Image (cartoon, rainbow, N blue to C red; front, side, top):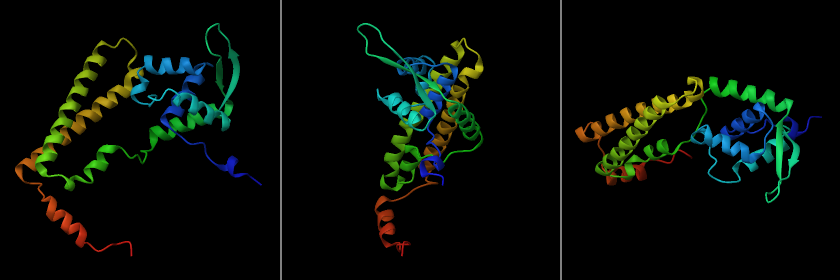
Length: 207
């Protein structure tokens, strides 16, 4: 009888994907992984803000049989460093994750759509001010990415995620500007008090 642990698919995450990809290059210890992620700019697509993020991810991948401890490195005046390597199962899963993540849009829950879903809690004037700040910030991101891409001296494929970030920032900035224009023209308008009263009077669909 197959156990639940055997049947359960390992949990996919952007950081787990990058860690497996690094180990597919060569065995290495977590400190080197963290340095390479930063040097290659991958810290803009995976979250390594917490110092132990990579260690926690490696521990999980090891429990799932995707990576294994290869050896321990000892240096004077340095803590021991465990070198990890990817397993055959890890390589197979890395390829499957890549294929799925490239082919299928994921159901993600970013902050901005959540805030948009509650737009009526703020006055139109306040929303316009906040959205203006966001549009300005997005335009700065585009300018920074343009400068970075122009001076980059690496094959384009190694920066393709930055092109994607730029395209998404441009599209979002254009959409935010159009939303601001609709609110300012009165095409989209609301009264916060009236909306709250309407919400309270709406029958609960939960039964």
